[in-house]
Length: 134
Image (cartoon, rainbow, N blue to C red; front, top):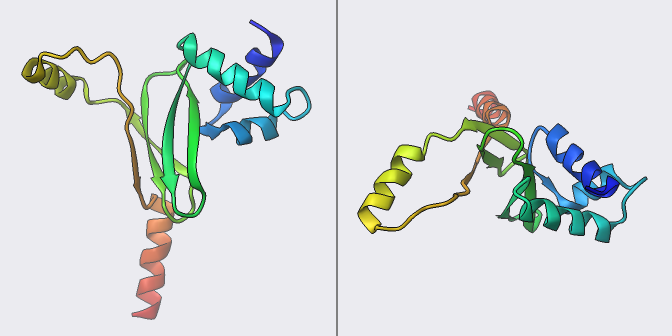
């Protein structure tokens, strides 16, 4: 694996939440240009080392986010207020996916789930602000 690919994978592994290609590029601006980051992300996805999903946010538009697959499969909540991510923990959908396979006759090989809403920090702040006003 090239040094650039290793650097991108290390950035994903170290991240506490999914990152955009731009975010990765900013972290690695000393060693990788934007095109190199995109090529490395494409390679890492092809090799099953990274995953991505597309998220639309009214404040930031449509973005593709990347996460390492080194750790256990995770699901995320994107906060509509602070635009951060909350790790929803490990996947609990295997039984549901098995039921879907049995009902449809299809074979599900992978899935992606993210949710949008309000994170606990913003929810608490919003709730406290309402209490002060009320």
